[in-house]
Picture 1: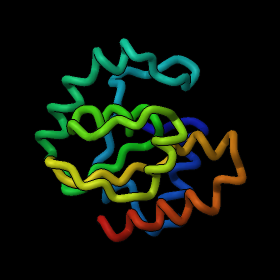
Picture 2: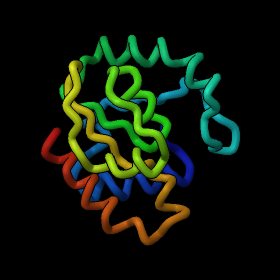
Picture 3: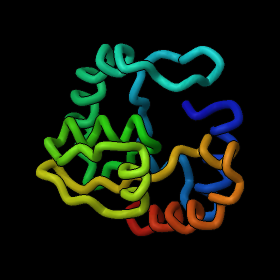
Picture 4: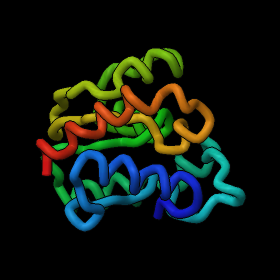
Length: 135
């Protein structure tokens, strides 16, 4: 999970935050490897959503940290929270704590976003630093 270019970025973000991968439980929105690290398609998300929802139920985290647009949108929908209308509306939620019936969401940008937008590094690193408080 999180291999390739985005995995390297995630390792840097976690290291900067002082958090080890071993201290986290990580899973994927889509349960199969997507070719060429492409974005998931809606039918792939739907095919895997029951597995993910059951997995989250079993792990029962106090804080759930979806990375990126697709994971954040899915978690908001599955927790019966208001669903932002656009990508930019979801991006505005990154780095904020969202109380839900099933615990707290703390959405963060997907590490791959930093590969394409290097100017996002400072604010993204600051948002990831908060992870230390949850571990």
